[in-house]
Length: 196
Image (cartoon, rainbow, N blue to C red; front, top):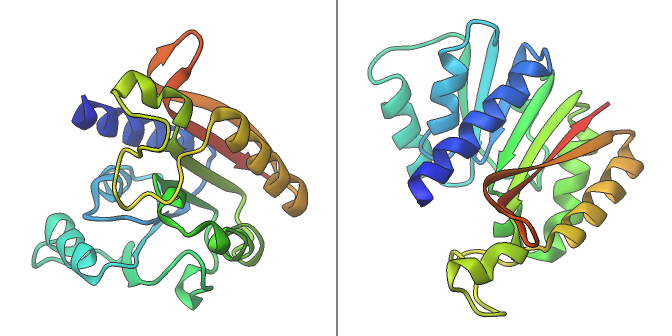
């Protein structure tokens, strides 16, 4: 189920980026490059940047995506979503797919200011686990889907945070679910799409 969900999540984020009309896009937290592979295959995207805080993940992404080749459209950078990076200027849109839950909650405001204020993006697509759904995965009240997750927000908590971020930085935000959906607990993954 998790592999299928991951593919569905990436496809949904890809479609949202494409629908935004963005030509220059970033994958912030690109890992080994699964979303980047979709972006590279789309001629609409003229510039593509992948960022990750793991040097090992970037090495894997470079090998998976490019091998020994080069692609002038693609740049991979080592960095964090909580610190501005000079390579991340001049982009239209960014995706943060299953990233924020890996941050210490004290770092969320730094991530917010970097991504939503400093980069001046038109579109930001953000996904995170829906904590309301966790009991259907057999998880207890304090259990998390991944040992590295610092939090897994309920739908109400996620929407409150997103609306606050949108208000502070001049965005409108729309919400959607990704994956299996329960009539009471919502979808397994939650998504916010921010547009200026």
